[in-house]
Length: 455
Ligand code: PLP
Image (cartoon, rainbow, N blue to C red; front, top):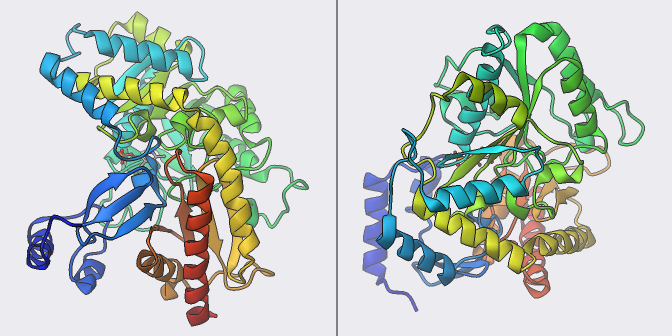
């Protein structure tokens, strides 16, 4: 049952198109559909549209919903905190009990030595904070020219100007230049489409060596930091080869460059470990978090700052940076409860197990246009290709991933096409075996139908 009549739904769609500018949405597509897809309710891993149709959320919102929809526990702690102290600033030397508890909790969880925690409202703010910390770290050592930040192609770090300058995906820079100076990019690692034409296991990790080359090109005295998503997210759920991050850490240490890990998606369990860098046993100097920190129930982000970086800020006496909503008490209350649920329900182990099952069932579909099924835990993508032998992509103008996602919607899946014909498979971490079987069945039928149109 839906709470809306057809006339009300029509009106809502008209009002949406009239008043609402959507983030990163094709207005032409929305017009051709007669308005947006309007979701009004969520339960577990499923959402319901205003028309009353149910969809499996294959993307966990935007990679953020770890504990699933409809958690009344989270609503209750938010209500209680709003009534008690909905807000007080943490600028000017003020604090509140939940900010302190949350900072301690995160500091004890993340794979960093004796870190301090800075709070933000989301991923872009966490990225900007990290880049400012990196530049300030060298500035405070009398090296203001050591300010270049090296990121990678296919990176997504957000859309505020600092984060956008580290991002490198088609379309995001158009119309917004000039970007922040002194951001550089090296080739991202992706064995399936290796730009060096090598095969995994028999290469020299050219993708990691590219960092050394870039540092030498820029001059080590000009490079502040290297930043990377442990597993590339929006760029396509791309997992680096074995040894990549260990080599990256070595290169950063050799040239005295900070290593910054953007764990905005990978943090809090999504990849089958609590944090992405735990897969490689590598500790970053600065770490960004958001999304899974509250499962998206309320906006929040955080930055982990290693003792090495913090010591300089501490001696300087002030970090002249902050957001009104840094350490918002309601966000802290929700985050603490969300982390408690992730730990109590062993959702990290479930992400690991169900991710393996998901990838193996998709591989078993054995469809001619499924090239690579890749991912870690519940951060996955299916790569569609025209020819699996030669790994040739479809003509991008055809938009096969977009077509699969449109068919999948008819089949009850909210499935997002990623760039370069990837399909995002990152459901909430509570997903069961039966849910995975249903999801893969619907996905398989959707890909098969599109395949008939494209091959
Ligand atoms: N970093 C990564 C790895 C992300 O995936 C995202 C968002 O998808 C961001 C940063 C930006 O986060 P936000 O949209 O909360 O600003």
